Length: 255
Image (tube, rainbow, N blue to C red):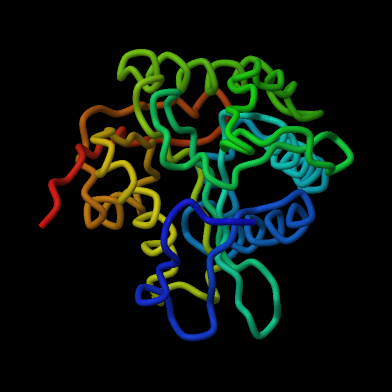
């Protein structure tokens, strides 16, 4: 499918390319998440950010698979991947939630039904604008075995923070994930900067919630800390707190 931005060949290592994600990528996207969670320090065993999880990793994998698959039916969500052309597999992906006012990401965007078939194209086609902004799919129920009170508290806190910072008017980077085997090659930065360039052109601010280890990376992309969320994980039998840094990036002027 067509990208809404020039391919960032100069930003990627040789042999890598950016595409839009499709439902057929879901297993590979889950694998990227699994590699990231298990092999980086972001989510080690007993990580603060697993405090509301089900104790069953199989249950969590199924939950994440369902969650990723549901995004393709959401007309307010866009996802891009970096593919290692030697293997044909995605090694990184990002999920963006643009505001309704943002037009530059629409080119080539489609949504899919539960069977992976295209059901809507929101870019202009044959001189007409297709229907946009249908209601997003419902929020998933808590994973089986998870602490439902802590689960609800976690996602309600994210929702409340989003309202505080008017994320309906911002480009939200809600997920960016790179297989640790491919870290250090600028892949994540290329994936992010391709979309942020459009935000700059349209003068749209961007927003994200950063894990502690990711704050320096996001600073390099132009994000600055503006707030934080702190979760008391002692209620889950763990020590300390889980901290997310709220970061906002104001649009950059062209050089």
